[in-house]
Amino acid sequence: MRKKEAHILIVDDDEDILFSARVWLKKFFTEVSCLSQPKNILKFLSEQQVDTVLLDMNFRKGFENGQDGLYWMQEIKTLDPQLPIILMTAYGEVELAVEALKNGASDFILKPWNNEKLYASVNLGVDVSRKNKKLNQWENINIKTNQYQLETQSPAMQEVMNQIERVSATDANVLLLGENGTGKYVLAEHIHELSERKNQPFVHIDLGSLSENLFESELFGYKKGAFTDAHQDYAGKIENAENGTVFLDEIGNLPLHLQTKLLSLIQNRKLSRIGESKERLLDVRFIFATNENLKKAVAENRFRKDLYYRINTVELNIPSLRERLEDIPTMADYFLDKYKQKYHKPDLLLNEFLISELTHYSWAGNIRELDHCIERSVILSGEKNLKLLMPQDEESMLREPQHDNVKSLNIEEMEEILIKKALKKHRGNISLAAEDLGLSRAALYRRMEKFEL
Image (cartoon, rainbow, N blue to C red):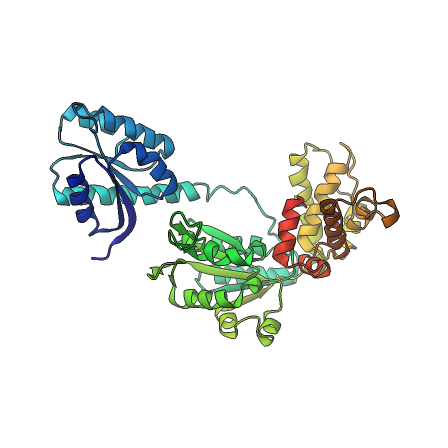
């Protein structure tokens, strides 16, 4: 019988009880820990991930009314209200059992216990714990915090949407290609919502914003003690997407040594955490995205050829906004409605002249640039008339001080000015701005977050 992946904590002041319970439960669960002093419970639970607690009801000599167990159960519930707790006592009065269950115990075990009953109770507690954790993580999965504009009048985009409808019903790997800001995240989530996995997790992992030394631990997780700061087992983001969809954005940023591990995961659907030799079976669907030319990256030996052919079962090229000018009026209205509500300016309108301005601009930053343009325009407009602040109009706002006029030599202030200048110069293109500044994409993302850009 394969052991269930779970951590059980037994708390009892009788060493014989701890030993016998641990030996029995260790046959069925991967990790069983013991504490003889209840005062150590909260510290232990704050440092470890536990699925079920088996808790004695009497710790003080001469006290056999079960109040110790009820007290510590409430302390645990304060720390983790949904953690299943099974109470144990040698003094099995019905009234005590009823009180314990009323106060949140998941079950009640009498000493000496029946081994099968003990296993069944703990196993049920583990199942409940897993269900609670998943519900907590994904309880809002069907509540859309962002509704997206997916209508399109563009023939090129209509073809993409038709392909998405056909591929969504399958579990095929999808590679989304397109410039920054073309809506790859929105389309990945749309594929998930049209799939049979729609009621399961959708996990977005932006590889461009992760520092290289965090790649592996964030994606694959780690075992307690695998490295200095690994104080407890940690399930990586891919593992947390079990039965759902993993969206790996900026796949071109994945280092070569992790490309090998990802290829193995995609092929075998098995994952190993850092510091762990055993493999975990996974059921996930993968969607990938990048604005890089992966064929060129393969030719330059920066991207594995076998991984490239594995991830692009279906390859969708997302047109830039300048290739779908028909959609600009609809998108602009969508963003305007969004920000009129957010900033309490219900009377603002886009007239034909403003629409014409929008459609005659190149939009190097694509939909994201249009979104930001409309938001800034709403913020800076009066209550009645929309003043359209086109990106070229921002030069006077972002114009860097001339060397003769610089009043501060503070390095952080100058760094912020240079980043703004690079982003302005390249119209929001992160890759080009990062190259101009001599930074990696990840380093630029961190600085943009730091300065709230």
